[in-house]
Picture 1 (cartoon, one colour):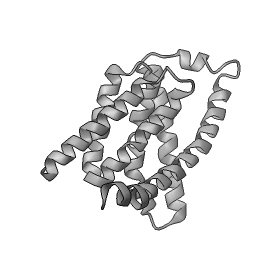
Picture 2 (cartoon, helix red, strand yellow; picture 1 turned 180 degrees about the vertical axis):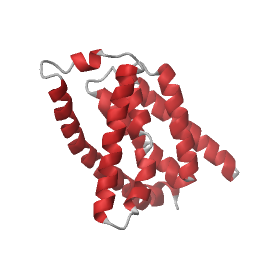
Picture 3 (cartoon, helix red, strand yellow; picture 1 turned 180 degrees about the horizontal axis):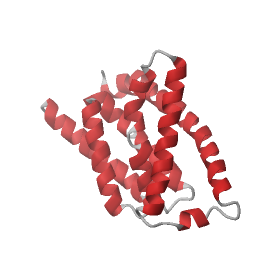
Picture 4 (tube, helix red, strand yellow; picture 1 turned 120 degrees about the vertical axis):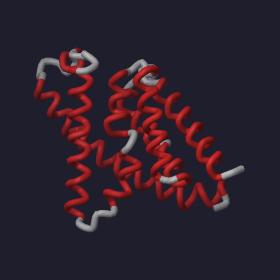
Length: 178
């Protein structure tokens, strides 16, 4: 099989897998946040096998289709705004020489993406109930959730790095014979 057809097949399979995962939001508690992050992990094999361009094409495909078919709009927006492209851009951020710039860049990217995602959910999709769901504390609970989200982000960042290493050093040699 040619290299191009392999790229197309792998991209199609992982696009479908991401969409199946995204479609499951709403069926499992806390899936609004966990499943977009898990779907982002699915882009790592695509990037490692076919490169960053193919992984971005899969990300764009899943993003566009998830807007139309995923029942949980908030989960779709989280995938689009951050979890979908972060595993693809993480190697570039990790390549920054300065540890301070690396950490600052990652933190700024996450916070900007999440704030923009929730602004889009509230104002573009008209889901103002997201704010009312936060309870009596209102805007303070959103700051608390953003702080907790930052903790989860750093765990996610570490997990993406670990999963990438595991894929390259363990899965690929054993199952792909490369």
